[in-house]
Length: 529
Ligand SMILES: *[C@@H]1O[C@H](CO)[C@@H](O)[C@H](O)[C@H]1NC(C)=O
Ligand SMILES: *[C@@H]1O[C@H](CO)[C@@H](O)[C@H](O)[C@H]1NC(C)=O
Ligand SMILES: *[C@@H]1O[C@H](CO)[C@@H](O)[C@H](O)[C@H]1NC(C)=O
Ligand SMILES: *[C@@H]1O[C@H](CO)[C@@H](O)[C@H](O)[C@H]1NC(C)=O
Ligand SMILES: *[C@@H]1O[C@H](CO)[C@@H](O)[C@H](O)[C@H]1NC(C)=O
Ligand SMILES: *[C@@H]1O[C@H](CO)[C@@H](O)[C@H](O)[C@H]1NC(C)=O
Ligand SMILES: *[C@@H]1O[C@H](CO)[C@@H](O)[C@H](O)[C@H]1NC(C)=O
Ligand SMILES: *[C@@H]1O[C@H](CO)[C@@H](O)[C@H](O)[C@H]1NC(C)=O
Ligand SMILES: *[C@@H]1O[C@H](CO)[C@@H](O)[C@H](O)[C@H]1NC(C)=O
Ligand SMILES: *[C@@H]1O[C@H](CO)[C@@H](O)[C@H](O)[C@H]1NC(C)=O
Image 1 (cartoon, protein in one colour):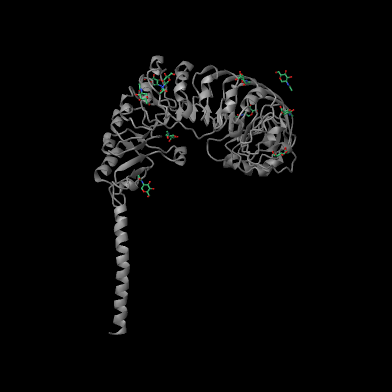
Image 2 (cartoon, helix red, strand yellow):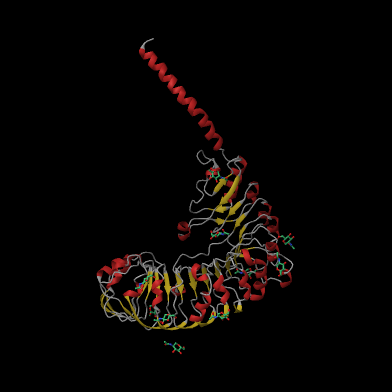
């Protein structure tokens, strides 16, 4: 045998060895790659026909080669073993949402062909007020249903003092998806997560009965649903699932008498409770005492009175307590004493008492070592700002604005606050004593010092703050000219207020400022141009 032929044979043997090695692997991966079921692909495409997709969100859906495997389409997930569609999630990303890119249309009954569908998320689709179809109740395997709407606003609100990160009402979307009886939901007895936010449930007088009989429900989210009050005689007849961990009834105008009686049934397992923007009145009820697992509690924008009961000091898991915009009163020192009486002092990361009637000076807060957000703005607090705040080195947000704090704030006050991102000290008779060459330990995003005393020079230390989104240094006694570097800095700004100072000089060309949503107020100065 010539050596050439030998080499060739060897080569073939080698190749076939590789082929034999590869073959089973190819077969294996073929098995894994089950294409989607034809009938379900067609059902999805029919479903898409009832949607208006102006932005090509579903462009990966189709019959063409390369798109045929509907299991790989955007928002679709199939069972690894049967190939049946299990997940349909058409939620758009925050990026798309911020650019107002979402789907419109109606919900097609073609969905019923997806027999194994367990997870259906149609949140942020604009259904233009058309009713929720009852046939969804026939999707018997659903454990997750999300029809939440798109009223989230990513813009900085005009009244920025209502603060970022907090709840604020946004009745921009007045044409809500509507619905009558929720009887159809009762067929989905294995639902674990239900979110019908912004679905108009005014005429769904059976809503409480229906959800109270969904025994596996872990998460119930009904934000801005215009819920009718619950008939008190139902409350005692129907269990609200004891497995509930998340209950969010934000913005429903519910009175205390509709809400408080459930508490006895929720008790120990609830982790996340949002009752903000309802009509709760009177003192914070004792019923919260039993909710020992709470991590998040929001009771903002109600008409609650009095203080924070002492048992709040024993909620060892409480991370966030939002009581913004109520009528709470009492001395802050006593309130803080109540909160410090047990283990809460170690767990609390966010405390919001913004816009209440709380009085007195700030007591020692140094014990709240986990605190990241502290909102004490718009109360009747006074005295000098307690130095113990300096020990809160995790602090990201500090709001003390709209009180009567006096005294001088110097650089040492901030020396431990390297994580600070939002600082609101506006509208206090405070004096800021910060030297020109100060290099702060933080990079702020939001800064409001309006009506504090700060001039006469333009604060040079601002040059170190390259991430500012909001800057309000109006009415702070600044005179002289704005340094050139400042206009470079302000490229990222969405809100700038320099008004009511004595600033001179030529007004720069402001046309370089981004986007049309930005607010700039430079009135009542001595600008030229
Ligand atoms: C399919 O398998 C992948 C990888 O093993 C896994 O991440 C995924 O969760 C599985 N999907 C389903 C629906 O079981
Ligand atoms: C439903 O979708 C909205 C928006 O897409 C989301 O914020 C919310 O957390 C979802 N609800 C549940 C219960 O997952
Ligand atoms: C809800 O629907 C009722 C009529 O069914 C209507 O009067 C009401 O204005 C709607 N509420 C919202 C917030 O759309
Ligand atoms: C209340 O819940 C229990 C178990 O969670 C269940 O056995 C019972 O039937 C429920 N009662 C009503 C009236 O739904
Ligand atoms: C719900 O609370 C009522 C009133 O206390 C009680 O009679 C009922 O047994 C509770 N149901 C459950 C499931 O805890
Ligand atoms: C402190 O706790 C007591 C007992 O719960 C309560 O009556 C009082 O109103 C609380 N005070 C403040 C200021 O929160
Ligand atoms: C800070 O609070 C502690 C405790 O209430 C108090 O003793 C101290 O005087 C306060 N300091 C200032 C400057 O108010
Ligand atoms: C704080 O206000 C109260 C009443 O509003 C007043 O009695 C007290 O003297 C004030 N304290 C300071 C330090 O200004
Ligand atoms: C910064 O925090 C540490 C630890 O809590 C504390 O010892 C120190 O006094 C603080 N610095 C100032 C300037 O208060
Ligand atoms: C700017 O600040 C001034 C004084 O603090 C205030 O009156 C004005 O409303 C502010 N401008 C805007 C657009 O918020």
